[in-house]
Length: 262
Image (cartoon, rainbow, N blue to C red; front, side):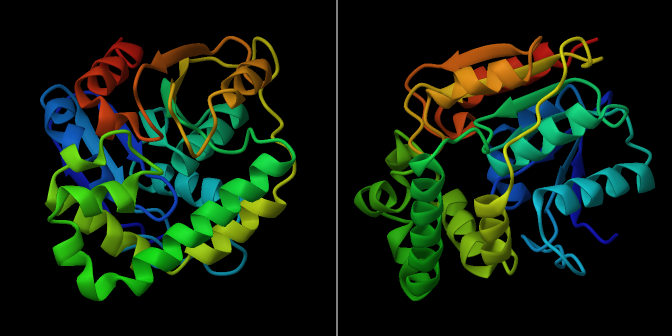
């Protein structure tokens, strides 16, 4: 399985898994402080960033299978991991399976929606993708100004104007070029309800982080996540949107290092 990745730092291994439409570059704001203490591997999921798409079906299960295969090929079985959005959802699936990951930090995981929430998520995700693609010609200019960063990323961040223009530009380019975006979005729409993990089945610590102001995965979904993953610990990020590693990078770094410490 060909999956693009970057590796930084030395020490105990830590895997970073991005969300829908993103790439490993979504983590750049916290890569350096994490790599100061850990050997960090940040990947591009199949069909995103520089990784080629999967052969055949694209779904949460096939993405999780591909991620598990990557870990086996790179001798990373048992690694600690942190994920965001759909990446966080994938890590929960692997944690449920057991025997693949160590400690897990799941930030704003998808999949815990009910009824209309699923379709609102899909509609807003589709619109974000179309917007990124249609505005690529102007993206260097749009990412350079505070007002336009607010418009582009208001769905994901409570302070998009404070984000580095270079990171915003990379994110928008990643959204536009993600060849598996549509297939993964359709898969998320038709995915059955999450199974969760039986009480006492998790063998390593699991922390679920949620932004109080998340506009993508609504904060009320956190209670459902905790019901399906008994034994997990819930961490609230105050004044944070869907990406705590953007809105609260220092707090996110501390949480990941503390949750995955020996």
